[in-house]
Length: 301
Length: 242
Image (tube, rainbow over all chains, first blue to last red):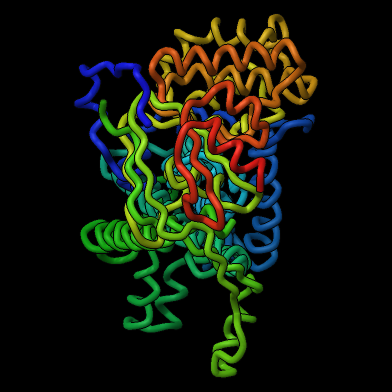
């Protein structure tokens, strides 16, 4: 049965028998970072293929959204502070934009990550590779789209007299991390479930529809505190997106105002660590679910 | 000789699910699980097989006998319901050449992407890039988007990337029908060259003459079980005389 060819024995050590198709989850993604880089680059190249504006769309879309919200909510509904409207938020444009871009980062990440497994079924069916790569690269691509918007925000803030300190830098990074971890965790979870039940992506669409409204992107957290009372306000604060948006406000918007509005109590000492922990917990839950479900991806797709 | 593949008593059942929505699953649950939500199909049945490094094995059998499913278990794309699969060394598949290609990327980008998907490192791809392009006979078109390639060029490039991944165990599934006659001969020569270099080959093909040419050992599958295992010529004649 065996033939006469000799196999080189010096390779025997690295040829120890192992079970194929069983990976180490996100640790493997780190090990395949070259492939991750190529997948991200591919996604960035093909996203706006055949369009005249190309990557400019990442500016146009949030720009139009921002203008529409600003006019409807800031001007018509009176959320912006002006000489005739003392009760509004100062520098509402900065307030609005800093929240919108962060929530958009979350929306784009989660929406593409949820579909990433099904959309890459051609590969997953045929070649074994760490499948976590697909949701992770989706989040990464969204982060690349997020960066130029971040740049616009910083320029706008500098024009409004923004002088950031270390604390501001910390809350900005924390806000970004909370969203990135949360989107990766939920993306793994819903991406895996989507293989079995395509309801998953519709559920995510629903979730993303309300995401902008259940965190203080358009309105002030004080309005929630006034209407809901302390207990429900704490429940409201448990949402990592809420904490991330407030962190961004603290970093970018608050320094451009007189500071009278303030951030929610204990934001830095309590809520940011809570937000990071909740996001981490969701990331672990997502990874755990993903690993339990991925064994049957190839036959279900 | 060391073992390249060790498969012990694996079973695989496919659930042919009729439904793909939560609503239907819920309705089925509420009705007291009446009727069959799913149908089962035994793709592999208590299958065991050992392959040593350096062997050239042809998996033979009619359509639906479990050949491709077995390859997917060896590559790790699928996991068995019971039993164990273990492989030694790097396993790479020439399964469905071009699965990782994207039509909107240039040939160059696709070589990098596909090479990385098949497990090559950046340095390995860089080192073999010229050789890949030369083997594929793509020449100046390497920076053209792949969607403008002829189907032959596309397959040649994909095949070329796959054969340059240099794994210890090669899984080959119906890909020898690549390109025109001269290129086919070139592919075949390359495959034989790999075999001569001591690589392990697992080949699935319905082209029996070709298989007899490349492989020494034949394994006949029927309904997910091994029914014959021996020199490739004997196995082929049994398959032909059925």
